[in-house]
Image (cartoon, rainbow, N blue to C red; front, side):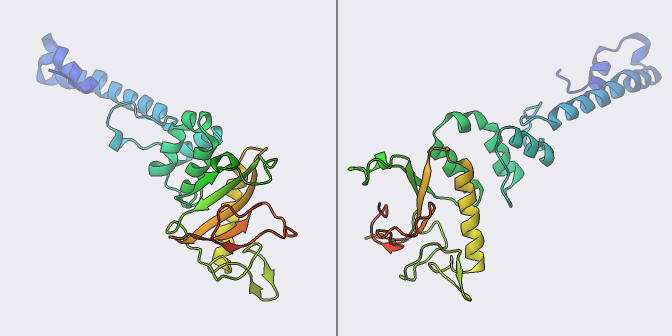
Length: 241
């Protein structure tokens, strides 16, 4: 017969006077219950700083949320506002080895999804054939959100960046030209710029607003206001140069 705790173990191995009503109660309390309490306290203390359960009952295992955040910070994996500790942050921290040894594209995509920007695609010049001109700009990368993965719409009006305010009117595509849009864009910028490699230059974020043929509403990550070739709305991706 298998046992699950010290109290049951004492009952299994008890002999002699310890099998009687009084002896069994005494041994059960002094040996069994006390050791069960110490064992549970030790297991709880160990699990408080662990991402994995000491026992296989995963559904009953809850690492304290502050411990998950601390272990995430130790791995340079931050919790984003509104991110669920158990269903999102803990799995990301558990996979920290794959996160930091894998490709930067996948790391960026995972962070964007955790921050509330699912469905992103990352492109670099070598993803295109031929590579976009000028080919000396090897460090550029583009972020694309396919239609249906974002709230941005197009007003088919030119805009350089959607968070600026001219007079009393915000400029930019629909939704971005609002207070909610400003917060959406600034948070998106911060996630991309925090995680990208130092030598990478974020060029544009393109929001696909119609498909077949695709039309994109595009905003600059790398600000270049005097770029005469820049178009904020158009059918081509990436917007070049």
